[in-house]
Image (cartoon, rainbow, N blue to C red; front, side, top):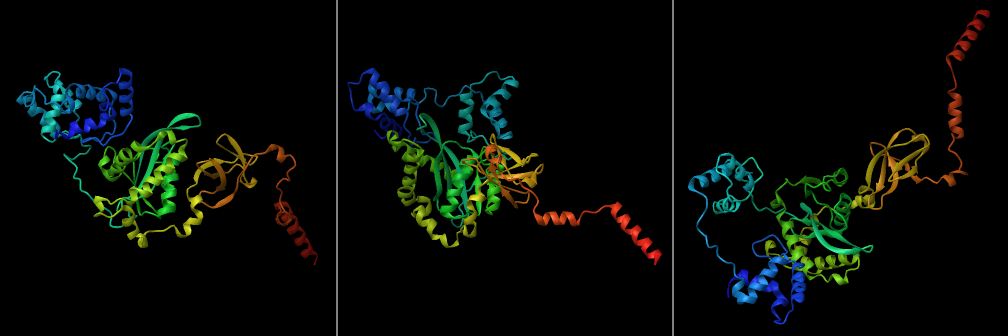
Length: 438
C-alpha cells in the first residue's frame, strides 16, 4: 500500500488499530484522545482532525484494512452539472473581479436567471482553472516573491498563535503564544505563552526580545488591535524601530511565522505532557527549552543547512545593541495616559486616587505607569519632561502631614514684588512736591 493519504490516516488511528477486543466505550475514548492531538496533515494548513472523521476512518479500516483508508474517487469525476454557458459566465465573473467568492458568484448568477447552482460545482470549476483563491486587491492577482533580509535584525516579524489550555488559579484557561522572529536567521528573538493577546502581552515579549537579542531596524506585525495600540507605536519610536503593519487578509506576508506556528503545533504541543503543567511558568519553561535546545540548533533548509543560532551569530557584530538605552528600558516600555489634577492635588487611575505635586492642581499632566501590574510611577508634561512622583492617597497619613507652603525665598520675592498703581502714584506725588519746595 503506497497511498500516502491512507498511511497518514492509519498513523492517526494509532492505538485503535493495535487491539481487536475494544468495547464501544473504549473506542470513543481513544477517538476523543486522537482528536485532541495536533498533526502535520498532508496538503492542509489545519493541524487537528474531528472525532467524527477519525471515527469514520476507524470503521473504514475495520472493514477493509489500510486499503479502506484510501480516498475514494468521485463517481461523477469528469462530469459537471454546469453547462458550457454557465462555465463561461463563472470564469468571466471571477476574472472581472478576483475578490469575488463562490457565494458572490452564485448570487450574481442567480440574478442573471441561472437559478440556484451548486456551490461545489462552481468551486471545482474555479480550481480546475486555477482561480479558486480569493485575492483582495484591485489587480487580477498579486505578484508574490520570496525574499530575505540581508542581515540578522534587519527585519523582525511578530504574530500570536492560540495555545493549549492550562490550569490557572483553579480554572482552565486558554494560552496565547506571542512570538518575535528574525527574518534572515529564522531565530526566535523571544517567544512566550501569555494569558491574553492584548497589547501589554505583546509589548512584554518585545521587551524580552530586545534585551536578549538587540534592536531590529524594521518590525513587521499583524493588523490586530493589540498591535495597533498607541503604546506599541510609542515604544518603537523611542527605540528607533520602524513599525510596519501587514495588509489585512494576506497571511502570505508572514509565511515564515506561519511555518513556525506549524512546527510548534506538530513538534512541541503534540509532545506536551499536560499533566506536568501546573501553571504558566511550567509551560514557558518548556517552550524556552525546546526553542534553545531543539529549534535553534537544528539545521534549516532555508539557511543552506545552517542552524538559526549559527546564522544569527554571524551578524552579531553589525546588530544594533541597546547601549545607553538599557538603563532606561523599563521607562521606555511604560504606558502613558493623560489625566487632570483636581483642586486637592489628586488624579484618578484604575479606580484609585493618587497624589501629585500640589503646584499642578487643575492642570493636565501625563501619568506614566507600569502596564503589567498597573502601577503609577510618575507624571510628566506633554514634552516628556519629568514633573514628579505619584503617591497613593492615604487620608490618615495626611492628617499629620506638613502642608506644602512657600519657603522664605518665595516670601521675599512676593514681598519685593508687592506694589500697586496707588502706591506708585503716591511716590510720584511726594517726589513732585519735594522738588517744588526746593
